[in-house]
Image 1 (cartoon, rainbow, N blue to C red):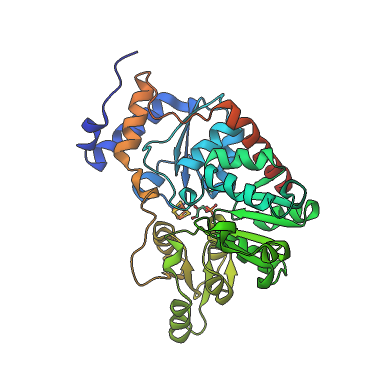
Image 2 (cartoon, helix red, strand yellow; image 1 turned 30 degrees about the horizontal axis):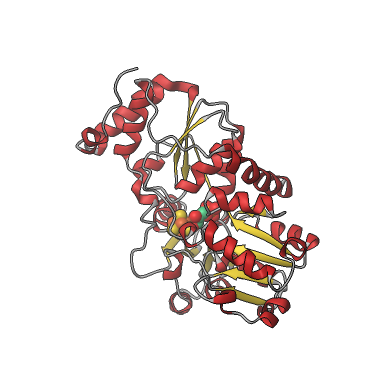
Length: 365
Ligand code: 13P
Ligand code: SF4
């Protein structure tokens, strides 16, 4: 095994040189390598992915691949999920370790344990509350759910997961994204009066014991910094300008944006719906810019117009961290027999996290 190649040398390469190296490494590694790419990846990286998808599709693909190496062009929690679902039997690599998710960081185990302890002063949460974590969360929060009879959800199965949860216990503690929780519960017919927000900086999350007892949904006060840029006013302006236009949004958007949209769903759902449109259709899309730009280019040839919802540029800065330089560095190291940036979840965390993820996959199938 040669000494690990240094990222500094790769940072000096231009994208064209990285492309050539990535293509050569893929050729050498062949079926031993599987590159997964989330829809928010920039084009220069996305084009190298063997498979692309939303969080659910990518976790299903990761759980099924026979490849020795899974290089995950996405963010940290996605690579953790791939490692958990492959029982550590595959080597999962995140090209840039700084590719996290700011929403995922809005909840952590200390704060969620504190919340659970505070709920225990008022009710018996292990009998009455199902903890549901959005897949955009650290592995130890998935493990928390696994230990407390809870489950994981993604943006494409949140409704099925909430139905499963309410069939077992009367309340749900949903973290870290308040919007996905609120949007999904509202669509299921749960009134807003039965939803409270848990502000972890305040005692009892800023709620009274009576409010907690009356609530069905306890929503963690987390959000996505990209999706919070989209506003109902953007939709109003679009409808004035393009009366025949249609609006599609990701469920991480605020309730007012989702309710003003014609369709709401995961990144994979957004692509499926827009790709099925007829020539002449015009879309306003409320999700990350790289996806929207790529979709707009693809649909232009079919006579379909696709517009980004916000007048200001907003990309997911952490998804953007993965660049061709890091991808080339990762792959060239694999070719040289070195593994860099392996994501490994310790088994004591992975086991209960896997239980919560497996439950989700059972609910979806
Ligand atoms: P999807 O599962 O819909 O791809 O969403 C992941 C995500 O992080 C959206 O911000
Ligand atoms: Fe996280 Fe938002 Fe980026 Fe998705 S778009 S990875 S939720 S910060």
